[in-house]
Amino acid sequence: MDGKEVLRIVDAIQRDKSIDKEIVFGGIEQAILSAARRHFGDDHDLSVHIDRDSGEPTVFCDEEKLAQDILGEILGRVAAQTAKQVMIQKIREAERDSVFDEYLEMQHQSVSGSVSRVEGGAVLINLGKIEGILPRGEQIPGESFRVGDRVRAIVLDVRKAGSRVKVILSRTHPDMVRRLFELEIPEVSDRIIDVRSLAREAGYRSKVAVSCMDSSIDCVGACVGMRGARIKNIVDELAGERIDIVRWNDSLQVLVPNSLQPAEVEDVILCPMLGRVIVLVRDDQLPLAIGRKGQNVRLASKLVGWDIEVMTQNELDEQLDKTVEAFSSIPGVSEELAESLVSQGFFSYYDLSVIEPDQLAELGGLTAEQCTQIVEVADRESERVEAEEDALRAAKKNNPPASAEKESVATEAEITSEPAETESEAEVSGSEADESAVVEEASTESETKTDEVVEAEAEESVVTEEASAESETKTDEVVDTEEVPVSAENTTEESTEKQE
Image 1 (tube, rainbow, N blue to C red):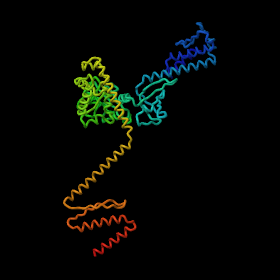
Image 2 (image 1 turned 180 degrees about the vertical axis):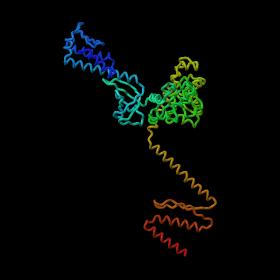
Image 3 (image 1 turned 90 degrees about the horizontal axis):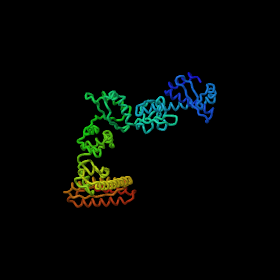
Image 4 (image 1 turned 60 degrees about the vertical axis):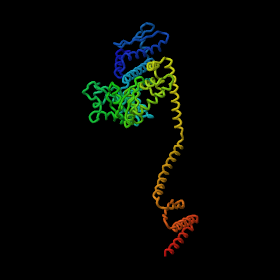
């Protein structure tokens, strides 16, 4: 085996595959050792060494150096084929490890590539050396890809799968927004502006808290850009996702109102024991502070790292009264202790069941046994309340819709009957000074009911004629439909003769 040829092969593999030379030398040594074992068998102690400078291989059998001609016999045609396969396998393993280490260092970093194919919702993206997988769950809701589209994502995970490396990509991770800020905003990439916190619900809304050590730079304005040019590029890349940029502050009294923008906050109450913040707003600002399906307050809680509870002043007062009364009913809890617990943000039995005994003892001056009993009672009450709520939700879920329809129909009937009664009362009140007689006539199904109001002040004959007309009308309704036109014509002729 020519040493110069070995060096040339090692240099070519190192240059093309980006594999360390030492790994390549080790692979060649392992290949020669495999061929020697095939020649001598497993009964001999064999070892192989290749000089790193000259490339000359040396084989030792039972600690004796073999001559070059024997080495040529060892590397015969069959043995050389075996050595080649071993060397190829070693090189592939080394290449896989190199790619694995490269993308492992790029974890949570941004990469881009083109879509090579789409399989069952998952998108395969060509990253150059390897194909990345963008699962359906890591895609922004509503977006779709076609072959050839350019896609930007972050490396979420890197795994070894046999002889290959599997790279999992994501476009829904919060770091995706962070990397886009670094890409589109030079001040962020230069660390002049720092992204302090980030909360995201992919495809819908994100909140980004930024700060700057240089007071002369407006960190929020720099992120937005001239006429929103910078933030617009980020929004377009995220398929129209809304992004709120919040000015960071180390004080929660300032940061919490900033995170709940655009809602206006009246007061912020901190409850350090529970890691909770109570935010008071006006009635007209309550829906804006909570957001659609609680999205605004949920993202604000993730942004600041504290649980945020939004309520009005009246709701807070009612909650305080109910909680003090409920806690006072627990054996061993005085009214003063109940008020102290409420002032620390304990508003439910569940909150009281998770309190540390030493904290409870510090608030009320109780013994360890008393604290344990109070926590046990609160735990039982919490389970009872939770069971009642579950039963109530189950009852609402199992309530048949027919009953709701019946209730709605009954409500509509009541609403319809009310105007009719009002109209009849108005007619009676309008004829208080006059005597009237109302005659109801029942016609066929295609006719409607009519009311006739006749004034009869002094003439009894008029009333008699109207009553007779009533009886004639009812008689005509009983008669068959064939006789009705005849009777109507006779009546018309009689009335004409009387008039003449």
